[in-house]
Amino acid sequence: MKRFSLFLLAVLFSMSAALANNGDQGYHIRVKMDNYAETQLVLGFYYGEKTYVKDTADLGPDGYFTFTADTLLPCGVYLLVTKPDNNFIQFLLSATEQRFTIQTDVKDSVNKMKFKGSDDNQRFYEYLQFLGKMRPEADSMRAQLTRVKSNPADSLRLTNKLADLDKQVKKLQSDLVTKYPGSMTAKIVKSSIDPEPPAFTGDEKEINIKRYYWYKAHYFDNIDVDDPCMLHGPVLHNKIDQYVNKVTPQHPDSLNISIDQILGRMKPNSENFKYYLIHFLNFYAKSNIVGMDGCYVHIVKKYYATNLAPWTKKEDLEKIIDNANRLEPILIGKIAPNITVFDRNNQPHALWDVDADYTVLFFWAPDCGHCKKAAPFMVDFAKAYQNRGVKVFAVCTATGEKAGECWKGVEEKGFTDDLFMNMQDPFLRSRYKTLYDVQTTPQIFILDRKHEILMKRISAEELNKVMDQVIKFQEDKKKKG
Image (cartoon, rainbow, N blue to C red; front, side, top):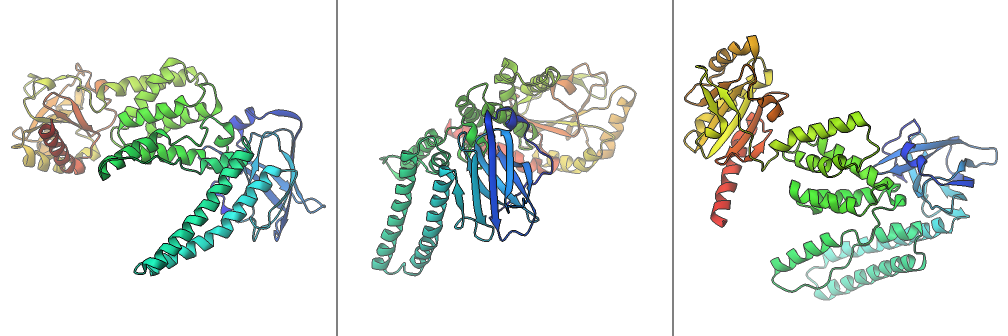
């Protein structure tokens, strides 16, 4: 049995239930649980990355828990959740088999599992039982291999035995997929099989590169990402998460291609498309990783701004698009918007006129507690990098009657004019708050000589480390280019 990690007491089945097929019979699932002392059993379901509660059944006088309704459930993998520990037992629910009986023992649910009226589930558990028998034998052989490394004959014998076990598993998997295409068992089993790459030629580095690109291109060969049955199961989200966050290089350009590839495999009006479009939007909207707002902007521009998210309320859609429009000009790789601000003598200075290999654009406020903590780090940074082609263009964000506090803050924080280019814009003529989305302070951007944004949203504590990495990267880039 496994642990039910998200046990909600409310029935959260909104999007799934809307897509359930209506039928004259509906679903009718009877469950007998040996060695289970409780009088209630919960029916749970997967939806994307989470699990929810669908129904609760009381123990009947016949010794069975019965879950029933006059409509069919969405196909997928469902959960029998036991009280009080919230452990669970999984079973399959296809579009056609939703009236059956389950009997098992909570102390040995896999080996004691029996079904009446569901050939698909019976096959699935026979497969699990087979794997359960093979696993201890394989683990024993692997343990023996570590002990006989110095004996080539024994190593070869054990390696061959492991290969034979692997062949038996692959044959069973192939048989299930071939004999029962379209069944839930076949879908689950097939999704667990990694596509076999061809033999590549070249040196080790070339082979590894070829294998990677082949693997990435064929990653989803054995799973239909637009299958609603897979959305209601534990496999699909893990596969997609692995592809996006492990297989794909963590750079917005690469991530955007992978996101488009995944969504491109789904019909624009399908439940899976809707779920994953919302998932990606929220994931990158909440991301604290520098540069990932590039993914958010891409998703909004390509999908939300082109009417591919018609379920979104008009007011929400306007906010989403407005947010993307504000972020787009200050994405990493963009040329920083030019602003003209003023020194203590009210003389104008344009950001683009700064003559330096690197400009650190620093927005701060006199009454900002975080700015006070950041100040000594910024001073140390300015001292350390003033002879390395770096200038700090510091813009105080106090406006109106409080604008005079800027120069008092400059003195208090040690932002001397030999270290900082101290500026302000008391009447916001430059619109820097809008152009740079300055909603909180401090805000730090690193620009190159061409005023391209190299990094942003950096903490003052990390600025030295990040600046070193930026300089090294740019120097290496020049050497290669």
